[in-house]
Image (cartoon, rainbow, N blue to C red; front, top):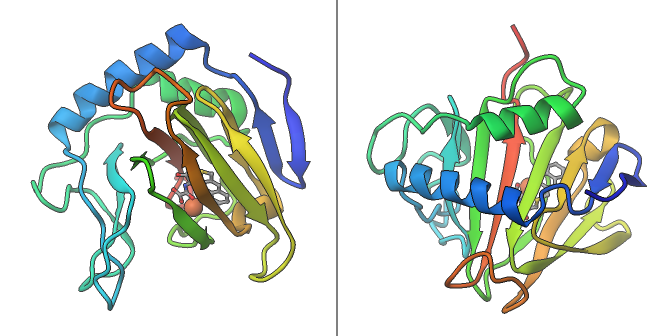
Length: 208
Ligand code: MD3
Ligand code: FE
């Protein structure tokens, strides 16, 4: 586990938070969860254009998007109609250690990037609680992550994320523009078919 670095106000980087054994345990738990809540391909509101990233969720709420309903959180999987699997203790413990927030996360969005997948610059604003941070975990192949300020079109900085890295976005970084420009195939052996998984732990509603 490396030292924490502050990359912009509210944004804390913990390189190598999870070692190889910790990454393997997390991946085994994710595989079990994906067996219950299969990956789905969200589509854009209005246009119905598919995302290049496949997704699923863990926890009481999950983020989904489709042409008809747009971006939203809901308690059930959009295809199976079943509740999302529980958040594993290791992720609840991570949140307790790095978030400085008194209530647990309600959602863990799981993003799977196969080679060529990307995520354009965006803000995360579908939650009603912006006081809580968002905590991200990277697994698998390296990725080029880009982050900027809270207005579109401002200067951005890039950071190459590696398997096991953790990022925390609180304060003014909670509403920063961010995205994934590219995946570097073959840079990790964690996923047998390659690719990258990103987890984001989120508080969706204000705490009780
Ligand atoms: C900064 N995911 O799921 S993780 C997302 O790697 C998302 O899959 C990217 O953007 C990924 O919404 C980036 C880093 C991240 C995630 C959420 C944030 C940075 C954030 C929310 C607010 C501010
Ligand atoms: Fe995001």
